[in-house]
Length: 212
Ligand SMILES: C[S@@+](CC[C@H](N)C(=O)[O-])C[C@H]1O[C@@H](n2cnc3c(N)ncnc32)[C@H](O)[C@@H]1O
Image (cartoon, rainbow, N blue to C red):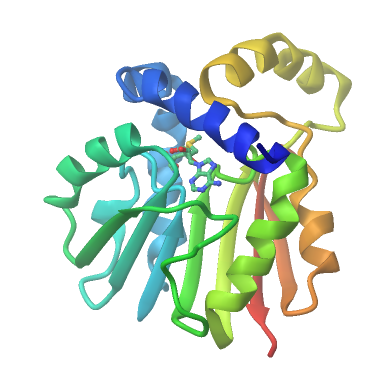
């Protein structure tokens, strides 16, 4: 079995358990995220892929004119998202898919790719594969917006993060030391046009365009 399959089988099994109490465990952070989600989605339109849709926390904030495809590796998380799809104002199609393969998705399909917190979960060796797939399925000129969390440069903040890191990794498979931005910079199709921090130097928003 390839390393990639093993990593994803492990994540899928983890989320098979976490899904049952994901929204409760994540709640302390979600109180912050729910203020960001509508802002992050307000200018997104057209054919949209949300990668790692999770329990569907973003669904109700999409504009009514969006055609959304939401994918996730975990059937258990998708089951939760399906319940939330009823609150969406837009057309939603949810499917089990691996962001590193996107095997059911044709090329040049989407105007936007959006994702919150898949990058801190996807193991580093798999990230360039997912980024290559994002480049393949975006239309030329299509845009991406990805939010992740990283280690702060501030020693005090970092100490706090290090305290939480074992819990965050155990429960969500998430880490603060992924290198998504550098993989994006290496992409031959995706160009990063903007990076911003939504809070301190921890919540990193990466935005850009598909050039080819
Ligand atoms: C931390 S959760 C974030 C969920 C949601 N985006 C949110 O903001 O609440 C990460 C999600 O990414 C999914 N995921 C991880 N690796 C994936 C992959 N390779 N392909 C698709 N989904 C993946 C997990 O199953 C999980 O649902």
